Amino acid sequence: MFYHLFRYLDEAYNLPGSGMFQYISFRAAAAIILSLLIVIIFGRPVIDFLRRRQIGEDIRDLGLQGQLQKKGTPTMGGLIILLAILVPMLLFGRLDNVYVQLMLVSTIWLGLIGGLDDYIKVFRHRKEGLKGRFKIVGQVGLGVIVGTTMCLSPDIVVRDKTTQPVETIYVDADGTPVQSVQQRVVLSSESIKTTQTTIPFIKDNEFDYGWLTGGNGWATWLLYVLVAIFVVTAVSNGANLTDGLDGLVTGVSVPIVAVLGALAYLSGHIIYADYLNIMYIPDAGELVVFAAALIGALVGFLWYNSFPAQIFMGDTGSLSVGGVIAVFALCIRKELLLPLLCGVYLVESFSVMMQVSWFRYTKRRYGEGRRIFRMSPIHHHFQKKGMFETKIVTRFWIISLLLAAITLVTLKIR
Image (cartoon, rainbow, N blue to C red):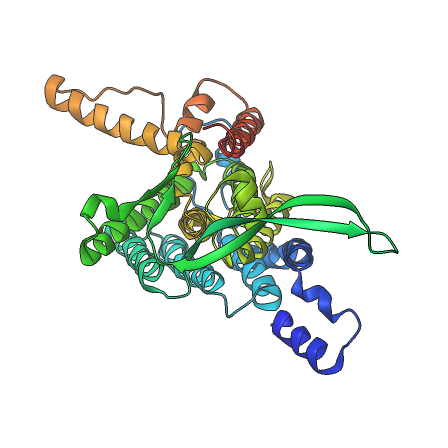
């Protein structure tokens, strides 16, 4: 809103200072500050309200250290995160940008799914919450929306980068040439509607899904929608499974979002995209404002969610955070980086799948189910081994930071 308002004031009245709102860096800084303040200022009243209404977590005794002490801790804290994302975006984002629109729709969509799940758990006292098939239907629906928009929207394009040599000649007062400077100017060519994506560690690392379908339009759309569904479902459920210890998914997600924000800025800047030899995506830089708002919301939420947690984000937060990370990666065409960047989510998900599959297999074969881990997801396995919760969380944060650094390195290692 402020972008459009101050642009008008700048053009119509030349209002001093109004031009700052044209800069992504200024609006991103404003978004992260505002989101932090929203969470920190409104977090305490929300926690007190939830306590008065007895909207707390119902903890099952699984034999984990300190688990029963968390009984009654307010949940649905994801509502604070959603508020801290949406308000800064509505104020500082370019609302006419298709990527911003996609991120806002995704945030609200997943927030509603997670909120319904938490509502059923808390108010209907059904520990299983929203049935899994309904969650999947919601995630599939978002995948269809995102995949279709990416394929069909005329505003979502990439551009090839071309270079042109330019010679600058400097002359003295008499008009005599004294210096000649050769420069290379990067130019943007015609927009291309494509389903290209980026493959890490490959020199010519742009891959088009249309190659797999022989260029058939309908088949390419269907394939891309299936990819979008898989990415959204996998990452949002991975974040949901990671949300099991105080501050775990919150802290793990911050480096992920920071890297995606950096990649969005580089991809949306033609000079940097040319220097790094990556895909140039016009208008993708606007996603930096969203990344900043999300980082501010997550860091601010740690104020109350760090050990011992005063509030849990619930599925309202975890499904939303994971889902918007997935949609963000799809928007900047870096979804194939997610297995590396979201490695913690991936390991948490695989630990559950491995545990369940092995238990069912051994039960059929031997009549008794056996386990690979003491408990899944894997962070509970370490708890069962006697490791303190804060040590597990801190180490997972460090691993997430390491994976984020390696992901950035893929820009140059090919």
